[in-house]
Amino acid sequence: MQDEVLILGGGVAGCAASILLARKGRGVTLIEREPTPRHKVCGEFLSGEALEDLHALGINAASLGAVPIDSVRLAAAGRAAEAPLPFPAASLTRKALDTALIAEAIAAGVRVERGRSVQSLGRTTSNVWQATLDDGTTCEAATVFLATGKHDLRGYTRPEDPERWIAFKMYFRLTHAQASELGRASELMLYPGGYGGIQPVEGGIANLCWVVQQRHLARVGNRWENSLAKMQRDCPHLAMRLAGAEPVLAKPIAITHIPYGYIRRTTENGLYCIGDQAAVIPSFTGDGISIALHTARCGVAAYLAGEPAPIFQARLRSALRAQMRLAEFAADGLNNSLSRAVLPFCLRVWPGVMRLTARLTRVTQPAAVAQPAIAG
Image 1: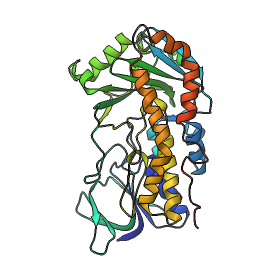
Image 2 (image 1 turned 180 degrees about the vertical axis):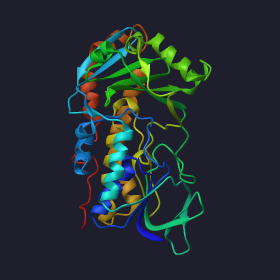
Image 3 (image 1 turned 90 degrees about the vertical axis):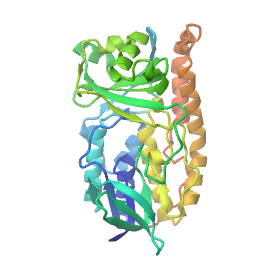
Image 4 (image 1 turned 90 degrees about the horizontal axis):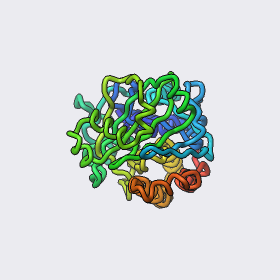
């Protein structure tokens, strides 16, 4: 069976692209390896840009229970500093968001294949794309959108992560006092070898995500429990926040190989790479979901306007490069600011630095990529 467009990956980017294409009357098949939406390693921060893009897709985050986020706190050692966010934001679990996006895709007329894993992707003798699934069946299309997120497809892998980052995510039910103290804030925690973030999500729970370099994890026996315990020793603010907290999951969700700073240079004709397959911004910026939606929107606009995928990919890279480099610089600066001499200064200037970094690393709504007009 051959469709006009085949989308590999049913996360934020893949679903967004499928909805936009189907609404333009294109025949779209979306293949997602998970049978149902599930919790994923994600900070679950929705910036103002992300909220606007979701609204355009027919997704009202507030109606799904999203929690408004008003400020960001930076905590390191035993100190913390707070700054108001310069834009509207919210927090929503990926499970809830992905469920709504899949439902919207189906309503738009997308043929969704769930619980199907793509084993390979290549060209046929007639020069159409062919995806081979785990049961040996194939799907063909003239155009493919690669939206497999942090998971690479064989033959289309991204470069190795030199820092060997490992990310964990756990939900906690905080004590009433600590939930009140957290309020409507997203808290960024610094510790040697990485950083983490905690913020409220729907259902009265809090999402704690943290990343750590593999060499630092090895020093605590490669065990997440030891890593979390050391984080709390290094950052008493986090220990305070988690005092008396009840874990919601049996163990954290984890993922490896996160090539922060990666921006895809080029692609093949008919293969539009979006989401984390296009660019991976450092987690602390909270811009991952926004970039997923932005790249999906730009990729669809390019395709509908007849712009070849290699030209789109190069243009997207050029447009995102400045924001990505600044985010990397800021992440490195935060990760290296734990000395007693530098830390007080960092906390003192945090409000101004946070506002500037937030403004410069945002993917602006007029689209950091000057999009071609969308054809009907």
